[in-house]
Length: 204
Image (cartoon, rainbow, N blue to C red; front, side, top):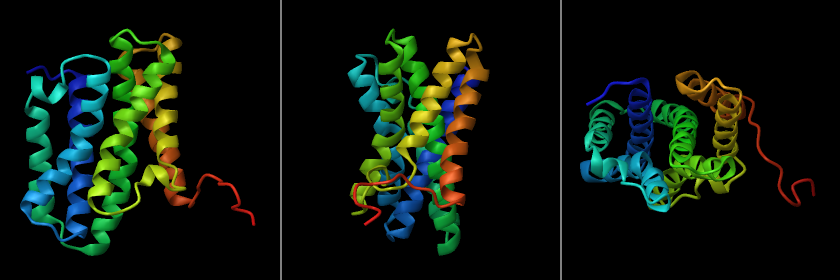
């Protein structure tokens, strides 16, 4: 098993999104099976759809370490995350880092598969948001991506930042890091300053 920087970022993204799913299960008072299911949804859901659309081998079927990482994260949250306020704050920030990581990685994977920049951005955003949408629907909540939260926007900016960095010849790990930092900064600003996107009729 290669431990190159890209693989490490993928493992980090898987763990972060799995934690967000397990924290949602904790808030809903689910059992260990529920923790596992909700950890897997954001961790592998978006990437699964991306790989199917790009007609490439589904990543977690080829390498089960992604599923293993998600389940370990679920167990950790199940046994150690008991403080309600702590759970909420950690969930918010896991949902900030996760989309930035997965959007950047999804964009990189799409480019490697031979897509153009626009399709790569779409695949990056899909990788970042679809799993979280499934998680929220299972928890009977409106998905964050469909609310005024700056969520999909952060994933989009992460993907665009990676495309720009790659186009400037930066490439590789530095471009991945740039995409993640930009996406995290946008989502973090939305959380800290309570920013949201405008909607029709919001001023009435």
